[in-house]
Image (cartoon, rainbow, N blue to C red; front, side):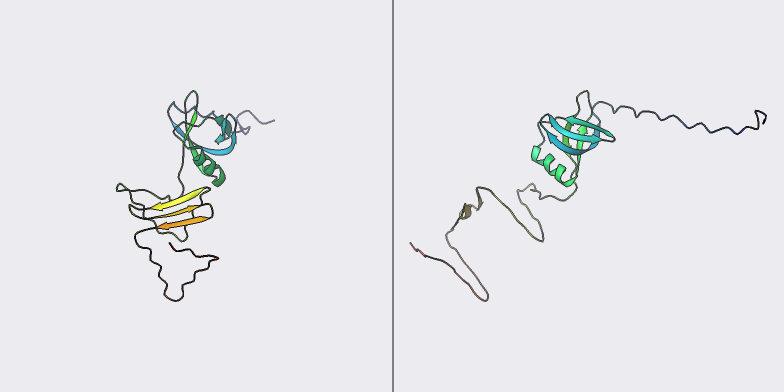
Length: 156
């Protein structure tokens, strides 16, 4: 038998401490897992919770985060709440002058009932299967061929 001094001692592993709770008002990152009747199921670290959505946050924004796997922001307090979504891609922005400028590869807009593109004296309105174009002057230009396909043309 070895003397006590010669025995190999096992190194003592440090005890894992539970993470300290976040101070009230701290903002935590969470992953949205599902929408539930009581709120939104989110995962913060290894812990899952169902949290309400702050009134200032659009639920459609959180649904998009769920679909895309984006993170949400949770305000830590006695009753934690989802306060926003972490933006992970560019978005169209309206500048201080009310202008939107974007250069994109493709632009698609879908409206269930109708859409209107309007200036102070002209508009293009799409409603159901009807398209209305109004202006003081309507100009159609084509470099090669202009085709008009119709069953009936009515000019007033």
